[in-house]
Length: 400
Ligand code: PLP
Image (cartoon, rainbow, N blue to C red):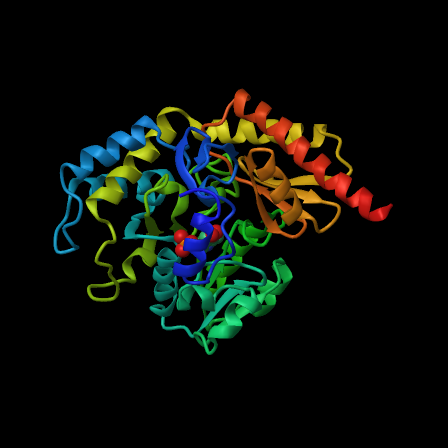
């Protein structure tokens, strides 16, 4: 399908939950994708911080092919080697192994959070704290702890007992008490505009939640699996959470989510408390295990840190009056703009063969594959500069 054909088909057949798609993509390789008309794009969105190894990576392709030819779905009445291998790897990488941790497997980020919300409920305490402007997913439990009123409103009433607090230690201190089950936080609020928590917040949150006997549940769905230049962002803060929700990058493009719980929190769930037909299936877990093994082998965590610094220098070095700064960590970056023109920058970038995303009207989000090197960063610099110049020219015309 080319031209307006796919647009017509999309408009007629797809439920209207998303905006008009930016392009009709047919193929990907490395950090590039191609549309139906053969146009090539450098993709610095990577399936929204998912495709850690890029597209069609030989390790990913081999793992999918091998496991598809071996065993794909058996239900949780059975155990399989890939499931246990991935559990072992995740427990080791998160440090949960040393804390008698346990893994629960799901198929998406929102499902990983649902498991975390259920974990919180199992404490028997009624209140759950979450942050203003947070994003934890679209299913009803995850939506209940998502701090964006506009997303929640059409679906109220949601879960009772959830309170949204500002991202300050003072607000947390004021809200905590013996009736709080858990605090759920993202180390860097991705959907809100790549907004890191204040320095020292996670360490203080760990100390305060422990003092009140509340769980600290981290949403590392976007920040996890090496993206921020650490395996998990909480490790940079030097803390051990009670649970961490994972998805996106741990599957490298295969739908896969997980909740890893540490210590006593790992014992809260018992038989019958939770489950999923597909969760932990051998296909998804084999691919997840292969993706994480490749991130380890190629040391893509270090690459994320190094390339993130390089990318920041490139963006700031463009000298665009539109760019006021770069925030984030590793390869999870937000380019702050002087005006609310991020959607226009996205459109202009697409026209120059570059895929980026508007995390909010004043922020361009960059979450490329963790495999990027000098070549991709050089190409990004050229295309992003062109996109910024296009938007600057439109602004100047408007001002004239
Ligand atoms: N939590 C965070 C921090 C996310 O960024 C997302 C998705 O963007 C989710 C949860 C929901 O994940 P999913 O879309 O896989 O359900």
